[in-house]
Image (cartoon, rainbow, N blue to C red; front, side, top):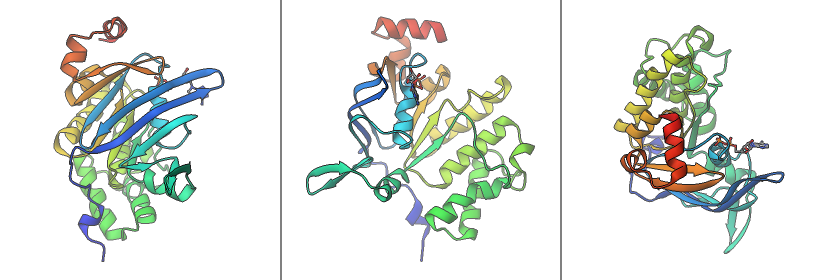
Length: 267
Ligand code: ADP
């Protein structure tokens, strides 16, 4: 019988949850990521900042296997994402392998992408029932807890169009968490929202960052949010990390001229 613990995150042990090794991604002649190395330890909140077009979203799309690297490897929780290790030799991964590894990752997009024909509760239970094999009651109990967590406990029966953009994005956050991912990817999750709805979504994410063990990798232009939740901030420029460190260092004493210019333009 399935138990609650079958679906909980493993204890945060500081091990490497995401590792990019010499990852290069090109679109035509445009090298978007250039020999990129970086890692995220379990339980940490890492934020990617930098100018538009510097490659930040490409990193998240690689992790979701929406695109593949041209060179290099990506590991999630010790497993190759787009490769399989066959007796010490790396070969391109089959669909099944990639799907299993990707289950460890949840993503919240700029656009909320809720199922418009399903009520809020069903939007959240659909994947846990169909993909994780939870029974309906378990999935609904968990969905109600998550809706409480994002402040929408009273919206179970609403359809997405009856909600504000900010509320829809909070449902999308609950939906991502319902899959019990080890890492949550957040791609500029407030950029499609009216300004007055941004704070509510960021407050929910702050709360999740401060009260749960989940690992987060965020692309954001919200620098105050980045400062509040990040253990590490990576500054990107032209497909490379030009500077990284704790937020108090990056935001108050950046070393790189390009970081200073970027921050003075956005702060
Ligand atoms: P950021 O998130 O830092 O704004 P992106 O990762 O979205 O940057 O994009 C990096 C670069 O890759 C940009 O120059 C963008 O135009 C290009 N790019 C992204 N996706 C594609 C694609 N599917 N086809 C061609 N070029 C792309």
